[in-house]
Image (cartoon, rainbow, N blue to C red; front, side, top):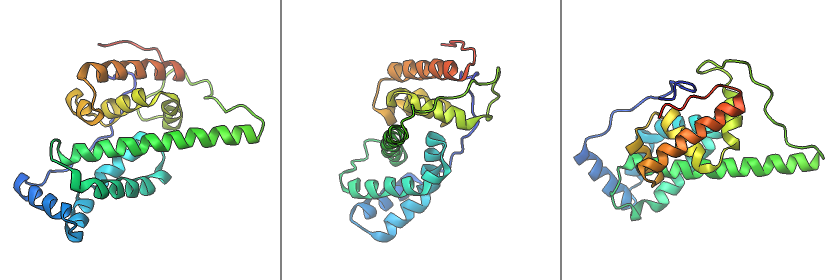
Length: 200
C-alpha cells in the first residue's frame, strides 16, 4: 500500500517494561517531577519525529514538542490507562499539529491579504516524484488537505501505523481511517501531478 507516495521514515523505540512503566506513570500522575522528566526523556524523540513527519517543518519541532508535553503533564492525572501512553501522546501530538496547521493557514491568508495577492499555489510538479524527493511540495499539499484526511494519511503513510493503531490515535473506526487515507492519497497525487492507483 502507498506505493505512489511511500516515505520510509519510521523508527520505533523499545518500550519500557509494563510493570516499570505503570510505576513510573503513577509517580508522574502524583506530580513527581523526576518521573515526569523520565517520561519526557523516554518519549521526546518519538514525539519530535512525529511532529517532523506531520509538519515537514524542522523549525516547528521544538516548540510543538514542548506544547505536547505541557498538555500531557497537565492532563496526566486524568489519564486512566485505557490506551497505551504512547498512543495517548500520539493523540495529543495530532491535536497540537492540527492547531499548528490551522495557525499556519490563517497566517498565510493574512499575509496574502496584506500583500493584496492571492495565496501561492504549488508549481507544476515533474512527471514523476520519487519517494523522499520534493518533500517541501508534498507538505505544502498536505497543508491544503482537511485535517481528518491529512492526519489519517500522515499516521498511515508516513508514521507507518497499522490501521488499528491509527484508529486508536484518531478515535475513528478502522474503515473510516482507511477511507480517509485513500482519499488523502488521491488528492495529494492530483495536487502533485502523479498518476493515482487505488490499491484498496
